[in-house]
Image (tube, rainbow, N blue to C red; front, side):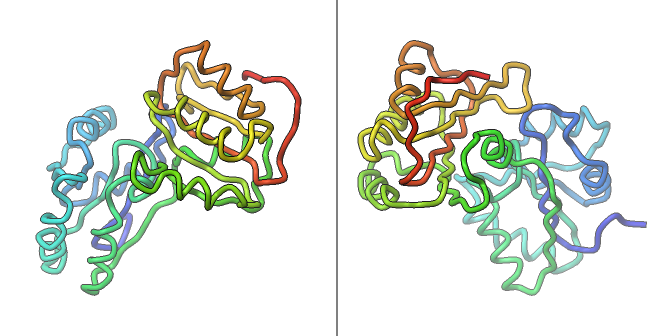
Length: 237
């Protein structure tokens, strides 16, 4: 008996520790006709680890627009796919939204399994209010960056951003310049992995920390709302 009924199932995959894969996710991956993957090499290693052999279909930022129609047609004639990103939940700062929207518009059934996503543990362990928050994903790299920061300056809810190791110091500096250096924040990296670390303090303190210590790994930056300012020292966990 199949573990799902939808034609397209979004399957969250571990953000680091492979033990975070759910039993239900494994069953779905074993039951589908093919796995639609952001990077077939990454997903291939996961499937190999799970002892599952399935055709892998590349689906990433460079081909998703031209692949959507083809995949929807195949689902309409009975094929069933699992959509996975390299880590975490598909469509959260990763490819997936266009395919989900097109499938729904075409009357194809869509389901998303619960599972790993990096921003939830980073938010919860930040020590900042998490009853109300806004997820911003990646800030614009160039065009629109200053405007977006100005818009967020007065945001009262906790803000959650993703950032790469190459840009995290610039982003922290820009946040301090826009919001004021006393704004409380937390930076988490390598969540669920061996070198997982969270650094908490003011934006000024976090800029100093990552100026002295080269940023490595993938980052989640959590910033308090406009009333979250505190002078306490940097805490590294």
